[in-house]
Length: 190
Image (cartoon, rainbow, N blue to C red):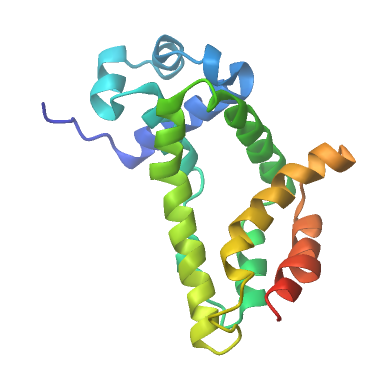
């Protein structure tokens, strides 16, 4: 069946409503009925457009993060990391962190959500990070055989999760930029 094309504005409204509902009720309590009611759409339209709740949620998350890491090229690795971090303000970072904490719990119960997250959000981000790091290798900033290269995603995700857990403080730009400068770049020999 052919999908009816939504305008970018309407699609953006739907995605924003999904994220608002996700923040309000969490993934498990989010229903297509609630999304339909909030967005004045039919459930049939939602299923025709996105196929499933996990796909709708992950595409909403992806839409909320329009800039790919692969699009950032300042000419230096430090500049690239700082540019990536400065694309989001502290308020949005805190909202995103809360969403991801909720989703990280939900993926244990929902294999379809985990698969959608991997395919639509994590893998594109990993590809973008690989391209960003490869440019640094190509510029001669990083050795291609640096053993820390394969652990950069783990270090970044660890920083995102650990701040709240260890310090009971929200994630913010200052912390992440300092973390990049104090942990990631030295691990890479930069």
